[in-house]
Image (cartoon, rainbow, N blue to C red; front, side, top):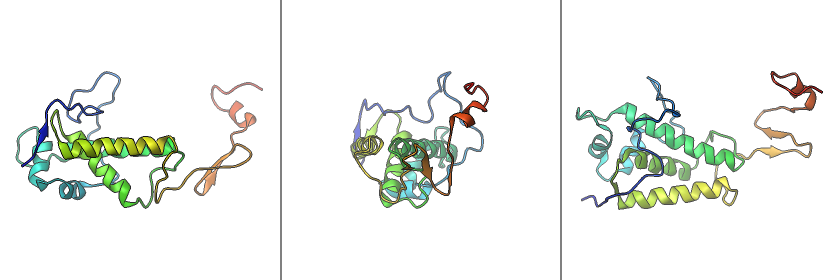
Length: 180
């Protein structure tokens, strides 16, 4: 039995609501990187398995998982995670994510799939995930498996194999750059 909490408002609109003028519509063939979660992880996390996922995604009542709705939710969840990681000084996406990131992505995906009612379990998981990501974004929590950007003493940000120095001279040659 699933206990629902009526009136819960997710922190972001569900994936099947109409988009405002400032939002871009999802593209046909939109694909998730699957970097942090995927369909199988979502199915395994739901108490009702695939039948629950069908209920959450099948707005056209076809009796099957709507992969486009699921993919949009995964892309939004992974994007939220990457945004928090980047704000916290980490390189994204994380090449070899720890189980914590996979669990967060799965929980955030499910949160986006619920319309206006969400189980008490997922309401708590969503709040926990957002609190954890906020701590990452503000630098109060480290992320297992993630690589931080390195700052050199010269102000250059180094990350991965490539690094670039944005000097005044370089920036002045860019379109709209400042004249020296």
